Image (cartoon, rainbow, N blue to C red; front, side, top):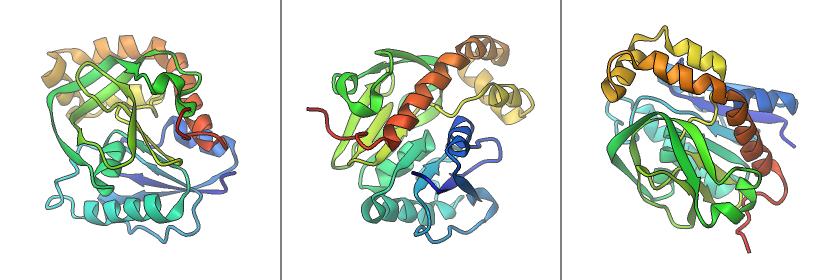
Length: 244
């Protein structure tokens, strides 16, 4: 049971999305820390769940974003000492990997827009990915990736470009490189953010947003089903145990 959840947010336009909805459905109180605005990380002790969102910054950009240092330390404390559920999205996956001793670097090419992800051999029989289709269409938005896994991490899904798309560690830590939090409202919101439109055009060519929107919106029910399965599996008593 989750009574109180903590969210680390890195940009105004990268909110909890679906996972905020799922937490509220379970009656959880949600505290959001806007790290990019200079808000301080509170004591982790009162919280049952930690959600770490995405962002345009990279894990190594601690000069431009010094709060990344405190965030990585907090994630390490949570992962090692708290033994409570953690969910990381995009940058959140990379922060978890680095906090636990893995490495993150530039990907060989960016992944932006709707792309295909396949469950790994382990992912096809793992409890946390139970109920997921073997092949998933998901929203990607990253140019960095995990280049070296932390000790104990398992890869549950991959793409043709990025090896680590779903990662689990120990029995309570889960993260996705793709944007599993996506909602129709977030897709529509991007149309009004010049920086996002510029990124799309750079990666996919001029006029990319209408094409991405046209592919993404029909997938929303399927994406929500996938994200709900991951969330529910994480919070179930058997989630993230190593498959037999």
